[in-house]
Image (tube, rainbow, N blue to C red; front, side, top):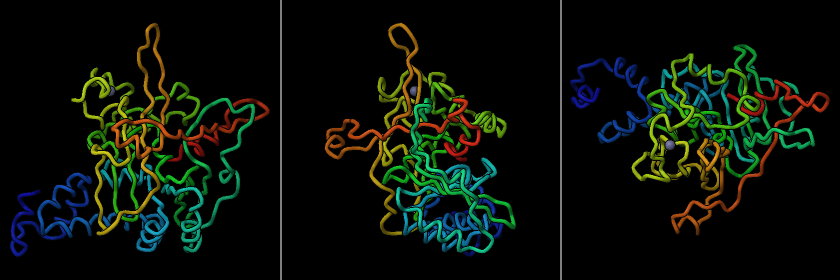
Amino acid sequence: MLLFLRANLSCYPLPVELQERIIRLLPLRDLNALRAIPRLNDDMKTHLKARIIRLFVSYGLDGQKSLDMMFSTGTIISGSAALAIVAPGSCEPRDLNLYCAAGAAHGAIKLILGTKGFVETPSPLKALMTERTPFSKFEVNNGIKRIYRFVHVPSSKVVTLSESISTSTLAPILFFHTTLLMNYVSGSGATAFYPELTYRCAGLLNYSQEFEKIHKPDVLNHWKQLGMEICDDCEEWHQDHPSVSPNVRRGMCQWAYRQTNDQWTERMNFRTGTRVKLGPTLAWRLGHRYRGRKEVMHHKTSVHLVHEDWFKMCLYKAAVEWVRYYAPIDKATGAIDSANWKRSFPQ
Ligand SMILES: [Zn+2]
């Protein structure tokens, strides 16, 4: 690929259309690598932007207007659609899942409902998720306040908008069940939090003791059927976790303390100038198991604000932990209504 592209513009050995087809298959890392060739820098940025616009158009939305809306409101795309942008060919995107900070849903709603063919689906899925009842036993802790769901009637394609419980747009995606989905597209570029794993179609499980109860049944099988590897416990790959050994790459470990602006994150911007602000810098640690003195212990997924002063001291201390939320449970039976799985963990 590089050999072809290093040739002079005037004597490309491959027709331009064919080059374009090849570039469409390249993951974010390769686009970034090609940007190292100065005269390809602009081409790669233009390509990434066009890739995102095509995605919006495939869901019945206006690509440029949607991109502008994401830029001005701090809305992002995540889930399988963002995975398809970061690693083309890895999956066939299903619903288009948008995320925004608390109080910032208006821009996306206006754009979607102002687009011909879209209707909002009626209420149950629109219900507030922050209710707590004595029956709400299961911790979900997924950082989502509210979900809006829209259908593009001519194509039956679904667009959801999840409003975060906080000023961070990114908080909900750090609670996803696997790192494969921890990618996002903003109005200025695309980002992968676990690039090394994602590019080789592997993901770490975001472990939870109550996994079967809080996630949709068979959610992991879906990825396995697509040929993805989901690693249940990173000890299968290494025993020197980052807290023990500095040599273990933090982008490959459930135990690692990560930050939304750290060096294991891969990002590519197509817009020059400032990046979109998506709220405060967050730190997170995936859910995992570890051996206590006598028995196996469980670490829940944790997402924290990074306090500036603590950060300067190179410590990852939690200043504020996100409030824990609970899955809505049927009051009569005490069971989780299966309709709620999708509300909790949209894909
Ligand atoms: Zn590890």
